[in-house]
Length: 612
Image 1 (cartoon, helix red, strand yellow):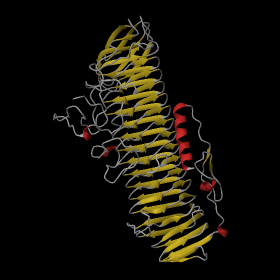
Image 2 (cartoon, one colour):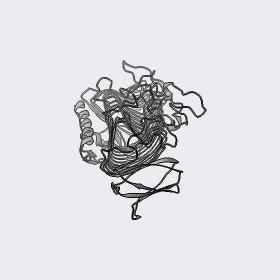
Image 3 (spheres, rainbow, N blue to C red):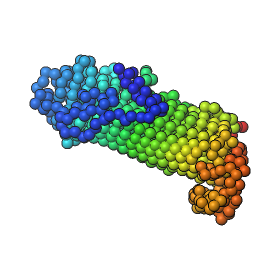
Image 4 (spheres, helix red, strand yellow):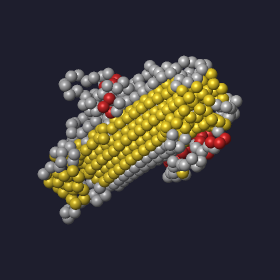
């Protein structure tokens, strides 16, 4: 069943990459007690969504500091441990100063624990430990405030490595209309060694390690989550089965401050909607001192010896985001996949010390508003396809990069930067794209194809890079392109284009308004450069072979007769040197202080390196 559900996530991701999408039917709201929520996507059962209970039929457990009162034969108390041995619904109230709720039922039993203003502390263990059951549902009563905590250590009570305030060996679901505070001075906040589902409620989690962790999956339907943790905010990983360890989020409000990744999955990850504020690894300001992994990560897992991964949203499998609002500040990549990424819609505010969006495979963006205010490379994948949306990028190296290789978290070689890779390409067919790059504005180790949209590139001011850089073929058949950059590495579109394009060597300063007018004076293009430039590439549907146009730039007026559909050089010397790091250092040229280039691995962060 779990593999089948994992297959559903994967198939949905595949459908999104090749077909128009259908949003999963969902009805998620904060219900009154007794209401039933439903998400018609196969990820949640009606039991997961149900937060109601009949108080008159519940087993009542009263916590009284160091004592416990209960009149059920299914509940025993010994040395502060309250053991529940049978299925049913248990209503807990009061305070347990130093103890544990232990669920030790049959592996076919379903148990519901209702927390109604409960406080449970355990100095050297879990506050709630599910040793055996088929499924346990923890429900917070309406308007209740509940706190579960660990004092800073865990003492083994059986052969399990119990290292969380809430630790379950079975499927675990949390829901309700109240608040649950988790305080883990050591270890994780909430862990399920099976499936972890959260469908409603408010959660405030402070943990030394992961905030939420599920071995087979983490599934969230709705709710409000505030997570501060020493490792990943939300973590799913199954090292025994690569099809499991996925993350699925239908909706919710998330505020995550994580020393590791914000959200990490060892398999696929899918986000349908939600509001996300994520700070990972201390944020983009920590990128200069962060110790990134030095090779491509085969999974979301990391041993204690490995460098800590500090990405905003990360998936080892496919990552698909249908919608939502995202504010991400990360030391490493903001949105990352070791496979493919699909962004269908949503609003993204990104500040990162490495790539804004990185996939080892394909990046596909079909809509949304994506603002990458700081990055090393803006959007990178083996292939990059943009068909819609509003995208703005500020990068210290390339704006768009079809890298032709896997991610090394910005380190190491990307292969021969002078040879074309048939598997790498950039295709732009729609949307509005604005790029401010210190490296290449658009860099493809293979082909570059433009068929629509509006593309504005404010490329590097120094030589060694260009506004457009490709190693294969570049063609334009539609759309608007205005690309400013230096003249030394300038490239135009190729002769396979069916729309006119011009590459003009002309100098100007930041703030200049560049206009292109037809012979009758009709203004075709008007664009203000954000940086100094010595060349400009312009292509628009109105360019016709044989016609004469006037280009005004930097106080200079130039008459251009399109003797051919492509005016100016079509090639040029591509594959230039990388741009500047976010901290102002140079990854592979001469550093600002004039010293010899640093050849250590962490001096190379994602750009192409010149062959020796």
